Image 1 (cartoon, rainbow, N blue to C red):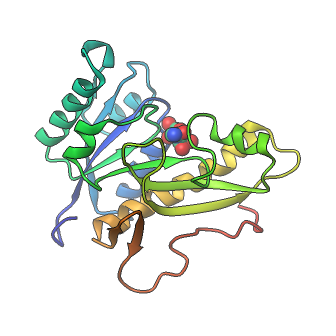
Image 2 (cartoon, protein in one colour):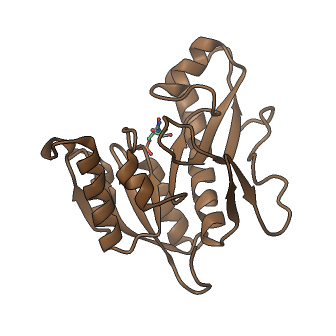
Amino acid sequence: MTDSGAHLRLGVLASGRGSNFQSIIDAIRSKQIKAVVAVLITDNPSAFAIERAKKNDIEHLIISPKEFGSGDDFYAKIAEELKKRRVELVILAGFMRIVRKPLIDAFPNRIMNIHPALLPSFPGLHAQKQALDYGVRISGCTVHFVDEGMDTGPVIIQAAVPVRHDDTEVILSERILKMEHKIYPEAIRLFSEGRLEVRGRTVKIKGQPTPDAAIVNSPLMKP
Ligand code: GAR
């Protein structure tokens, strides 16, 4: 959380295309959130997220886990680079790895992740396909704080979308992604305003009553 007037310093970790990263850049541009992306860190030298960083004059670092003896050393290095740049909130935006202790300990309740399902359902990879295969009628996305588990940390915001009978994985993923791009900037905004309070495994949203802040759309409405 920042002093009023200050811009929250974000460090973004992404492994791929970076559309969530872009939604955060756009939200900063349009002043929806008062923040600055201090650095993009990627584990993938061909991640399209790098192009987005370049286009927006954001520093980027490629840190490959192969260069480190252990996973812990890899995460210690990431934590060190983030700290050097005075990052206050770490944003996992399609970072396809399970974060380990050295990074979590360096940023307690200060790492967010977005996952394309209504957690705790369908954690891990291919969440949208898992939802289709299971046959649920509603799925969605979740922004949560990161702990040492896989997609297990305290939930901040969720958005629901319908699953239609003729959906493919691609179509459902697109419908969910549209909502991801809404709730991730919103979660960062709430954090930047000091309105998120973690109590055990739940997150209270402080401030004026926002009954809709925890669910963005009705599953029965067309997104
Ligand atoms: C997003 O759908 C995000 O929710 C998912 O990867 C995609 C990244 O897209 N993350 C996970 O599955 C993490 N478990 P993007 O690179 O365009 O933001």
